[in-house]
Picture (cartoon, rainbow, N blue to C red):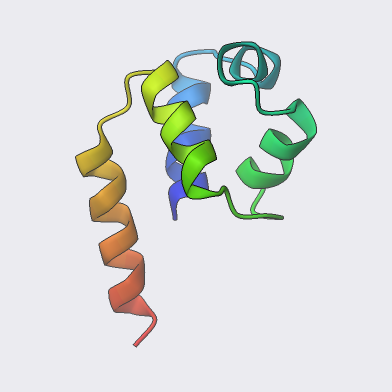
Length: 72
């Protein structure tokens, strides 16, 4: 799932949720819920995060496609 990928990405780089909030404008509480699989990120939120942290959108696309295959 995307949230697991992002959580690992941020942990490896020692980026905390407040830094994510500062760079994206997404409230820390929403980030926390998303990274802990309690809510889904909107497409806009995901794009903001990807742009702010230079995350490869192709990797995110692969994760989405792989999770969609598992739904069937």
